[in-house]
Length: 445
Image (cartoon, rainbow, N blue to C red; front, top):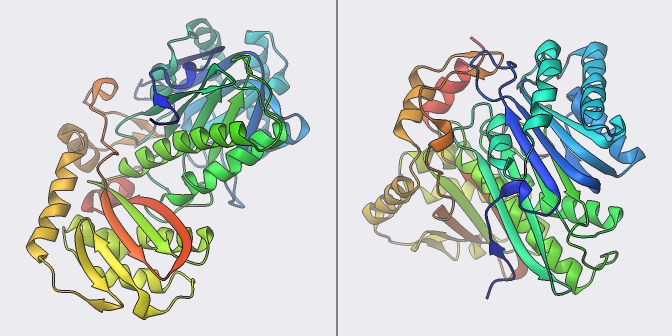
């Protein structure tokens, strides 16, 4: 039996959280663009952010807030304007956003964390945000997670949400999450926004350590196009409303909680990779035999991020040479005679030498896997041929709220072994299609 079970509710599945998402007018399209997650009580807060030297004001703001006080009550996220490279006024806009939400919730402004997404170089439309905050607070509910997930997306075709439940100290403990991301996805951190809620009681330092490790095994192991962003933000709240005993040190209960946190982050990370701009399938790279886990993850990331590998997968071409080449340039030493490569159930290389294999069957495997996790056709047509963005306000003629979720449980599997070590790691990516270029060529025009 699994250590946990999947439940409904996203970020409002854990006890003591409400969420909301509204259309405040930040996007010219009129789509939802302002989201709120709020805890009934002050929650322990942890964060992982972009490593880029060019950062959005919200990233610097959250870093400062969490360094000064590792707790928060609320997260406010706007979609439409990234508020990155906006100078001192962008910083003041972020401060004002926190102040306005704090006033509306009757909480200190330093208990508010801020996230933004959209076109770089554009300030938040503050008039729309000011008018929207009272409506956003009024809309907050224990069933508002889906609305919040809708309000944080930009070029995403589908929303990303998950919630899990386990038992700690004979009481149920839940972790929920939502995320957005589709383009500019690459480790350090993978480009996206993700918000995680938990109702366990955990110490601030341990919660931060858990989140950092979970990010390394999830959001830092996905890639779509090799580009990182200015706004990457992962924030996790733990409000203690499960009333379980406090977890302050690593032990069996802490390991169980961290494993569930990692599972939530990996689910969201895979959903982001599967929703890569123009993608037709999710790719999972499994690397074994390395000297340590980090070496295995590094090789997996390199293969998943290879444009040649990604292009071959899109062409349904079982080109093992591209996989071997990517593994070899990952910067991890190994003997090439130990290299083994499998594509699904098809063995392509063993002991560093190619094997005879059913090329037509391997190609059919790639095609069938892509079809099994297909994206809504009307969405692809929109993103490919009628993509119009003004300040990241995207007009899509299909019902995003009711679009079928892309499956992440049936990825293309690339399994690589590089030796006899115990190191094992995974990375996730997607294929590289013609539509990726079309989407990004027209992003701001």
